[in-house]
Length: 455
Image (cartoon, rainbow, N blue to C red; front, top):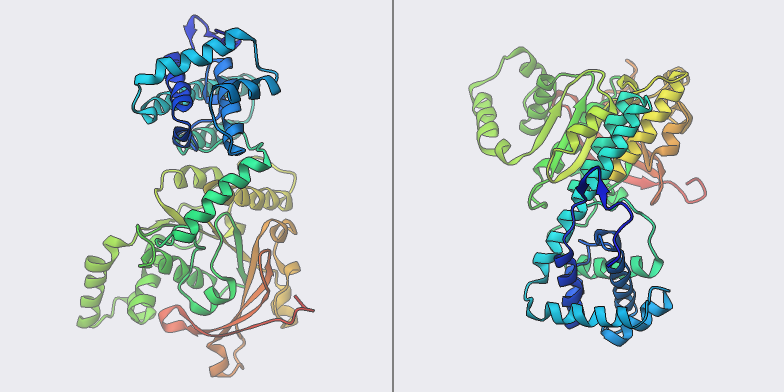
């Protein structure tokens, strides 16, 4: 049989199991329906023997065309693809079926092939990392490459993204069938528990980068905390989602006080001073003892954290549902750049890629320029501070706007507008919320979409 060109690494043979590969291919010839047990686990490259790669590729093509995967059809497909080597190949396919006639558990052999392929991938990754080190590649770039590749490998993500349309559509059909029958909420966008926001946006889509921007003191951290805690505590998700909240400005202690205040309606000033009533102490104890064990809300107050550090930490969290980063302008890049504008551009692009890689929505808080206060107007996209790339990389841009001047009427100072200025997948408009400063919380009032000619 014909092997890959790189049969040896130094004096060691690359990991592979010829017997397992023969068992799986023969099992499919005997029982064509068993090919479904390989989908999502094996690709053509999972097989070490080149002839096995060719046979499996032809099997997949027959399967995608809803044609029978039997000897003659397989031989003909191999001939069409230029893989057929005459009677020798015909005899080999027959031998595969005879060898596999006594095999009852194809899945077992699939797992062996999958494991051997991953071991070969590890060797390939290590070779690449070694080359990068010898080429004097920056340390953080080497670390990011290695962590991303090993994360993808551990989570079964394919590194080859080139796919035939017919294969993608077939997988999409399977996905839609699963989606139609799902009752667990596995596929739905992340709902943030503030009804007017959820109604307007329809939830936050996985892989999206959502920018939440405001001037200091408007309440963007409290708003983000409200949404993040709601997702972590939501009973819709089973198991409940893990939420990661990275705060580069406030400590974990300060964040926890805000969560206590908003969820137990305890005055935030009394919490800060420790002047609590007996029943409030009881409420806090019950909240800690009865509620929080079921809430996987993870806080990190590492100052000046880098994206590489964030990604490394997030890859270790199971059932990740949402990431919040407070805030962009306090972050630092992992490599030197010519200007702060370029650094911010690199940060937002990397965060968008991270959201897609981890398949979760990422809410990124950002400051606005002083022009909003100076001109006494609503924010706009050009007010995003330090870089125009922020709006380019974002799927959704939301602004918080609240009357801040001393002469504002008391009733108006408790009103907050969430201005959805950009929404790549839907409408833009405004949502009105009630701000409760004593308890650092936001509540729904209503929303009004902007006219189509403005959106």
